[in-house]
Amino acid sequence: MLQKILLILVLAAVVAGGFLWKAGVLFPVSGQVSGDVAERRNSNVKVIAEPVVFLENNRVFEAVGTGRAKFSADIYPAVSEEVTGVFFESQQHVKKGDVLVQLDDRQEKLALRLAEVELKDAKSLLNRYERAAKEGAVPESEVDAARAAFESAEVAFDKAKLDLEERQISAPFDGVVGIPNADVGDRVDENTLITGLDARDILYVDFEVPEGLADALKNAQADAQPITAVTPSYPNRIFAGHIVAQETRLNIHRRTIMARASINNEDDALRPGMSFTTKWEIAGDTYAAVPEIAVQWGRDGAYVWLVRDGKAVKVMTDVMARKAGRVYLSGAIQADEIIVVEGVQRLRDGIAVDVLNGNEVAQ
Image 1 (spheres, helix red, strand yellow):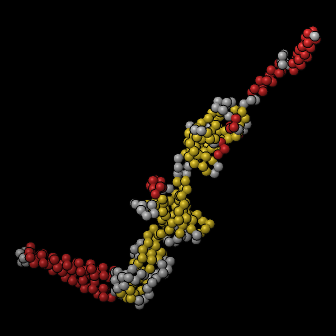
Image 2 (image 1 turned 90 degrees about the horizontal axis):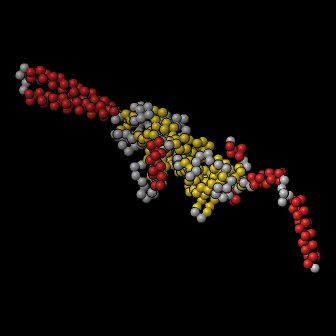
């Protein structure tokens, strides 16, 4: 019985040895050795990666604003008088000093002539007294009185000139006038609005900025940062401008500060009082911008996998913003480093990786 058992064990050993010999396990051939090495090389984790890019974390602030002219004035008479001439039409371009409306000035012309005669007479009398005083024929008190009379006549003459000038209502600056609100024969006074005058080659747009952007607004004014504006009057046109001014204080009820942008309006397309939707792109800090799928989360926070010297390196990061499918990260990431975007599930710190799209990444 024991002999049978031994025979069975010997036969089993012979069969197993033949099988292993055939499989090349006990004595592998050289081709099998190289195949095993290649298999171990192919055990590197396959990933898809891309270069890291750095982008500015800019913000866009939108607000509704109101347009106003560079210079704007409502024209009123300085005196009460009858209108004798109207010399402008609506939307006419006028120059500084152009007469818009003439008031009756007959009495003022006569008063100016009289003042001129009196001034000339006072000057002549003063000259005679001054010459006589040198010879001792006239006391100094008489000379002083003549000098005072002359100076009084000068004041009367200047006042007569001013009264005459006030009968001409002139443009205080270059601009465009509105509709005339007076006709020849009308009697106007200090409360009569003659017309409006606007210098609109430059249009200002005033809009409110929240308190949280006060510091950014200060820099925007110093750098004349650009803005864009659209108005319902031209829905398909975008107007470019620059931030040029801001209020000195915040509105305590709204917690906002008023900002002003300047828009070139040389083609005279825009009008004061128009509403505008403004867009202001606020420059931000620069961060590594990576695809969202590249960011992983762990117990200690967010992290990404970088490829350095053919190996995976885990880098902890802070998420600063998310925009258009990218995450803006702050951390130990350099420009043009390689970040893994697919295949992150099998990665371990220091493990060898093969970048399947290596040629694209190199480009």
